[in-house]
Length: 84
Image (cartoon, rainbow, N blue to C red; front, side):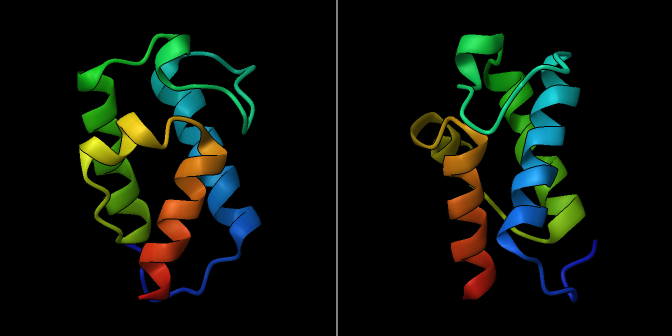
């Protein structure tokens, strides 16, 4: 867990895009792509939120992913959680 580091928005966005690509098996995912429209499901969503927790130290409820479905949107949520 790397939660002692201060992250920039770009670093978090890149991390989230990378996790989407890895978990969905699609190297063409961009920051605007919808997780569920590219093959995401609840099991993959759990993998995603656990990966975020492990890498950044932020707990994102799985329900958040259903409302914040793109890397850009999820990045905003992670940044807000990191801010306090």
